[in-house]
Length: 338
Image (tube, rainbow, N blue to C red):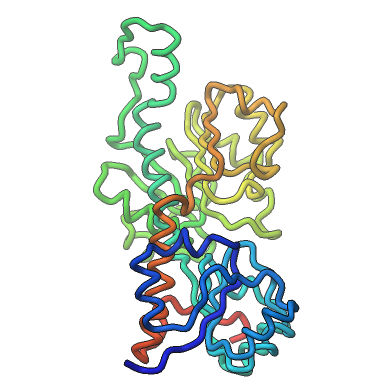
């Protein structure tokens, strides 16, 4: 076996034990020198600096401090950053990104692993809400008597329904569209840089944004929450939605103009399943959305949690195993400066 490499962790304390199972930890200990329960929460801490000076790799993740130029300079042997989150470079200060580029420090992330449970959440919502699951459960509980489903839920079902994907080039959107292929949905897709060929590859038809909102029975949002997309979906887009159509947001609440959304939902004209909101979760206790029968709010559960964290852990371990075998990383993340 080749000589072990040195790994330090900067990640939320306790999270590594949730990410890796005991068998995963045993495998990691076979190929790397890594101490459990030694997460670095301050890159300037003297004890941390002592460990950092010999680090070959940095295992980075949620709730860790920003990686500054000083932090990278304190790790002169560093070869790579293995991020247990969607992006590694978002954690690096601008000067640190330049240092990483100059020194050839690579980075990986677990975006592919974290995308799967979000896409599964979207698929579950699409299937259940197409069957009027929430509406029928509520009405059945209120009536506690026979309900004529053919009359009360005349439009329920999936056959021929249309799902619109906003920002279809996102990883989660692609995974969601892939999962939709076995079902009889029509899929419309919009993204600024999407081509007809890319849409067709995922069983979708490329259309403009207005068409997504106008023709879809379900509109699923996959837009990142960045300053450029804040309020991107407003009264105009929401106003185009069919009466009774469903808005599904598992991306970021800031993408949707909250006042415009609240107005539409309070009117009862459209429905929504919101795993994210603006303001961020939870909404204020007096928000009308909590009590609306046409709204389902979930506490940001679409992403990796519970046993799905092990999928992220397996992705991290796989990177270290490739490194140990002298192979390139699997989920390489390009430096924005390249």
